[in-house]
Image (cartoon, rainbow, N blue to C red; front, top):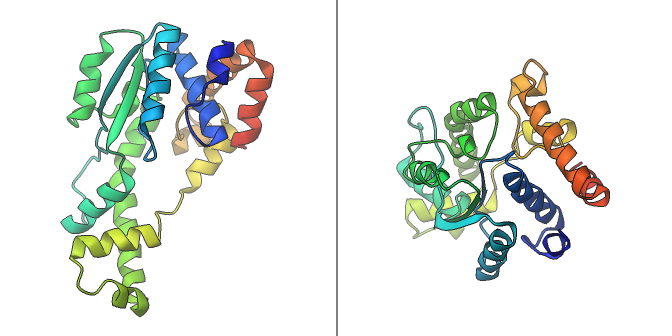
Length: 236
């Protein structure tokens, strides 16, 4: 346990704490699998996660990152879609899991046949809601980027001679995707939850996110109260 708490899984302290809790949740069989696919992942991160897997008796697997899933085709330009995937979607993923049977589900995620939330132990209501929101969220972001490009002639001058995909990539980096309200609301209500809750959970019509949050909270405090308190204070 001390070796785990001394490890470093992310440069950001709060993400590091959350990573550790989720890995421990896999060990405790609360979570089927842990996935890390942060855009800034480096070789040292891979070594650290491999060592954690060995320390905890978990399986380790490195793959390409699973694609985002949506319930319908997005109404955006293909060039924007390619640019946003290049900027917003990590290329690689690291998985830790206890049951070898999870490997077949990981393969389905990689090929876009299964939403990754199902094997990360997220509530079904939240997984399905986010999958349904993927298209409208990206379409709204596309319209916002289009408007900002049009209303900022200095940006247009800076991207002259670039392909349309390069133009969108430049604009997405200039104006990142806004953080949705459900992110901060989830953190306020469920600081230990490993996912972003759906409106049903945020309004308490569904208790699934609350139940999961309580499981993680109980696990964190059972391991080390200071560790749990740091997670709670950092997230909030």
